Image 1: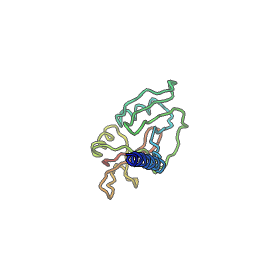
Image 2: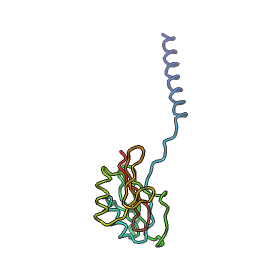
Image 3: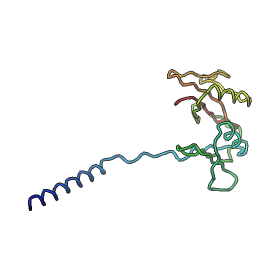
Image 4: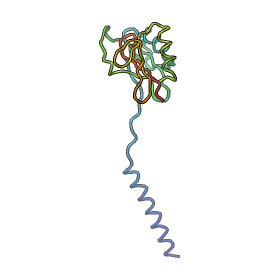
Length: 154
């Protein structure tokens, strides 16, 4: 009886030590995206643009000062527009936000209806890039000249 009791205590102790070691060697959880901030010159114009072009939903913004708009990006975070940027800034296409849509062709049709110019990666106007992995993509600018990509990646 005494041996069974010692064996049980030893067994429970070993399990506890193993769990403790496993917790110490497990990696910390990675950071997750909270929001992306875009500095804009005309908050109303940019808010209308992102709301209408991408069908984003406005969510309550914490500052309530008339200089911010927050949009939900679903489970990945939020898009935060901030008024106050200097006009006529030049942005590089390599630095862009990318949104995926079910159909690039349908999205391009909506850009054409709104007379928004777009291009492929190399800069050919009104053209769609077909990547080697089969994904279609286009690039265009928001009202402040920030580059945007739209693709059909799944």
